[in-house]
Image (cartoon, rainbow, N blue to C red):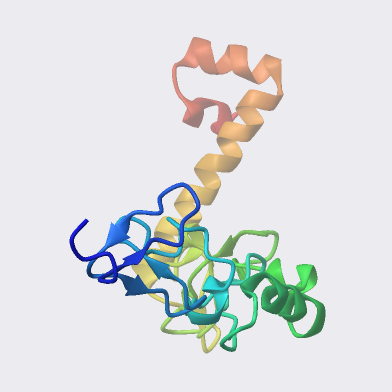
Length: 184
């Protein structure tokens, strides 16, 4: 060894390598070689003083501020104990709040679907004026639409009547149409 006073030995117990360009850890102030300079490589006990982190609360998802020199786990624990906004009653909020205004319908939609004429909220199946029997100043929306609605109600009543009574069902099969049953 020609120049024993130059350089310094690595402070890592398992290394002790003579390094001519030693580096000093900014947290623990010990000298290390290039292989052990990072906090993880020399298991620095003072790394939390210099390692700036912004931990996130696991319950509410908000970032928790941590001062230099303070452990992140302690700061998160204090946040949870004091002002964490994780309230189970607040967390479970109603998503579908727009309830259909048609009598008998209990459907709820994510978005508000408002009728242009009566300005009431309806579900997707009752959104059209003819579907929810929208009345504009006591009259049907259109005469043709009203007539179509009456026809559909009559045919649905006839179909229900034909299905509910087995005698009429046999008559329908014999006559071949629903009109023959309705005329009798």
